[in-house]
Image 1 (cartoon, rainbow, N blue to C red):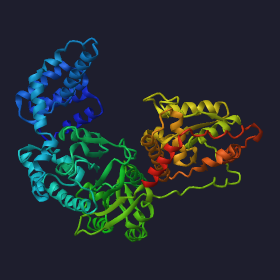
Image 2 (image 1 turned 90 degrees about the vertical axis):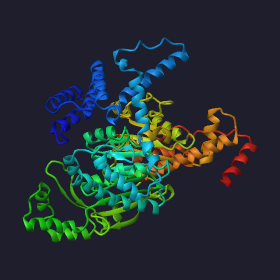
Image 3 (image 1 turned 120 degrees about the vertical axis):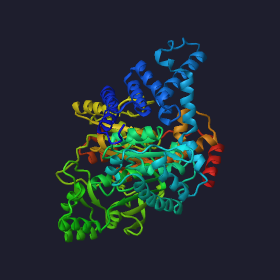
Image 4 (image 1 turned 135 degrees about the vertical axis):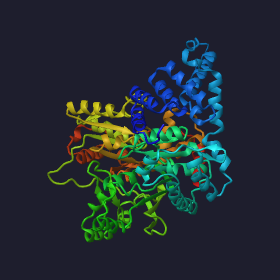
Length: 631
């Protein structure tokens, strides 16, 4: 099979889109032209398995094993392994629960324990974890030499390495292929490893998590196989075919398809390091800003962001292409039309402005130069700039190194202690009201007061699967839209309460960007100990110091998370102290109503509810305070 066969790429495209029959037809066409191979037979088997045609899939898997039973191609039967493991688990569950056993194995299970065991044994013997263990004692340069040699041998020592994409595909993504591409990659890796080690990222630790941003066909991801446990190594890539290829070649590593704009599916504070070579050299300004904000979400405090971009001399490089008339490559023709006023481009760059020349077809992608001044003015709310290097003696591109600020030193609590004054004639018209923090019931009292005015719907903790109306696993987007529509049809403002535990999954899903952009936010701030005591008393749990201490820590963590979220999303909530609500809930309700652009009748508001007294035994409370003081 020719590595450059465009039909193969088209088949992978269909596969990535879930169009398995179309992919299989192309595989058949390729087989008719090139003949059978273990790789092609395995591809056909996996495709038919995905399509549900298990009997025919079995034939191709057997063919793959017969053609090359010792390679990872034949052993890479992940779906078969999953199927067998799920069946074993189902049988075990049925045995333990005395339920009826699953249906008798079908024809596909005739694949047999021998082939299943061999596939699993081969994969375990040549897994990424086994590879990491075998090369851990190598020096960086010894490891780099093995990675580069794997272009020809396919091996690192005696272990199989992920296969390389066709040379044409490599060149499209990185401008070179084969040994040349990997030698260029080794240059950046030396730089990256040095930066990580000097700044406290212990790559050899099995706990460190790293993401290759714009992973493409995995040029840099494969270098990381020595340093990062495969469970903790991520590749973030826009192109679906590259994600599918890398998942297969790397053995189901954490390759994630992302959109041109975030968010990603990664959880907050997951990563110790995210790096990317020649990605920010192509992103539109708004796209670059959005990804820096996403990195602030997914990189843990103290973690690093290392990205390259085009340097200042790239402006001159474009000018030289125009002057020389060298249009021998499509990229050169594009560069000749980029930054045509060189002096203006230099002036813009030196003034700290991003330079961007989009391609005709993709407005988010083109040629980009991010100067140091732009980083300093726009990206340091959540990060500190460790270095900005624009020196071709160091790297062919400029590189910026950011370190995530600790939560306590992040952008800070930059929000108003009282609502900002309303512009005359321009009252806000929020689509909803969120009361966050709650602070031991104060938020609930505030929402109840607003609802008593007749101008708001009290939706309670509607985003809590445990306490509200959102079903577990439900669609929060649809849920909020329906609640908002019902309230608006009744002429009222939907008002919901949120604590951090319920909001955290939504904050990482893009929900706040897509659904809450026109929602007013009121944050209730209170004493963590007082809130913890009230929550614990309401739970009915025994008054124990360790349990109370854990609850206080949870309250403090939630408070910090809200501050972080508001700072990252540039949300300026109306800050209300819990003590204010407890003193005069009607006055606070009137203030919030005015903030939202409407007036309420003070006579319709309820009296301030009495704060519930804690029943915590004095001895337990004193012990708790001593523990907190010592912490």
